[in-house]
Image (cartoon, rainbow, N blue to C red; front, side, top):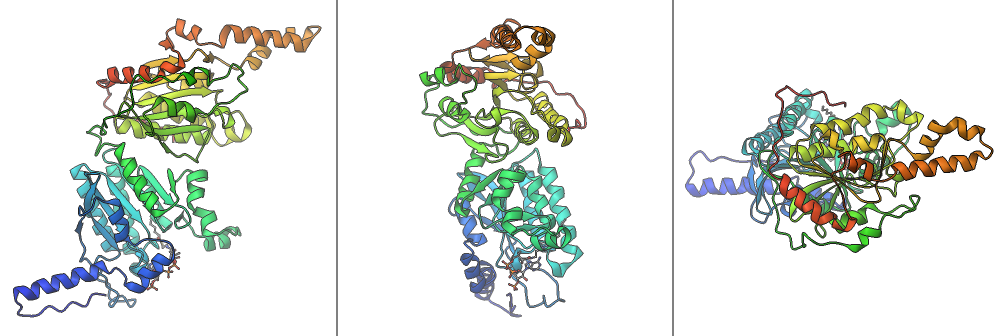
Length: 525
Ligand code: HXC
């Protein structure tokens, strides 16, 4: 607690000792007992986290001495320098970044008017300087003693989150509780990273849920990292530990530019751009019932160890990832044939469209790998709006002006052919493997639709149907008709994919797409 005495007449030494004393108190947070309690929960303090996140010696703190001015509710003697949040700027791998870290050891990191002012200041600084902002959240929510003042202050943070959206990267780490309206700042930022076991996010906690709906759940079951990374999709990443979450943040930022008027950093790659992998030529089986792991395909094509999956556990029938190709950052969108045959559904539509928009806003080219039987049919999908959600993918691809390249590895049937980066929707270069099946609908459905009467009236309906299916497959299940019509630019050997993509990207790096002046489109949210 602060208890600073200001001598009326003081020497320079006195001034310095006052400052040092105040700084020392700021470094202590909520005191030794609360720091120990924080460690006992398996959590680091805010300052310890910042020391892992930022380059050594780079942190410049602002507002370390700010305190609240509340005198009632017993708060007069509960004043801590910094008021429960550490704000400032520093560097990550030599690149500038603004940061704030809530300090749970001070009044549970609760969000006060002073916290808001400090965070706002750092948000403004980040936006004006064009640098990313990283927020470390660990808080019991609005500071109850401040009433509506702390509640209203959330609005000031949200306003800045939205102003910064599409200008600078915003990353939220959830490293403890994040409840009530506090969840909406992370939800407005580009990426949310949660820590397994020690973090949770929910609008209303387990007790209120039990009293309102009668559902009994633990905090982890309601809003733990696994829930939000896998089920709700609220978190793009789940880390096993705080250190892993902080390291992940550094890695993530390495794929992004400092702001949307800059390009993401290009690294010098020691992976040969002309590398070809024979194994790719046989990875897709003639027998389409045999799946293959799209991750193996991607691993062999992109720079070694460069793939960072986003939303890995959410909608695993699709893969979205940052990667590097000859050192250049790219975004990958791919179907995963091992999960639900790579079909598109509501969740994968949300996942893919969000990722395309992130790539587009940060000028990161999008490379799409297509092996998809189409949108998922079913009552539940229709009732929950697969049309509305599926439209997001189409909107996002059509709107994206970054270089767009597609590779059809196997199925591109019906809606998936059109929706997943087709030439007609602005794909710049469209490749297909010889195993590609580009057709308006599946062979069984087409045979029944076109020849149902003949099949039913034939002496051997099963054999007749099989013959029509085989005929349809023979005619349409290949890439050559689409190549003939210019819908595919080139049919390539799978092993050539890496060098082909490298060259296409090289050409497209100066792509200029015309933009139409309008306020904004109406994205089908
Ligand atoms: C003031 C708070 C606080 C809060 C915690 N503390 N939350 N002080 N306002 N919101 C204080 C506690 O009094 C305690 O102080 C210290 O922080 C540590 O809290 P504990 O409860 O001892 O810690 P723990 O057992 O780990 O529990 C953590 C917790 C719990 C689960 C987060 O504190 C909790 O349930 N807090 C309230 C959560 C909540 O309902 N928030 C919503 C507020 S309304 P001492 O001095 O004893 O160390 C809201 C709406 C915003 O946020 C809407 C914006 C649009």
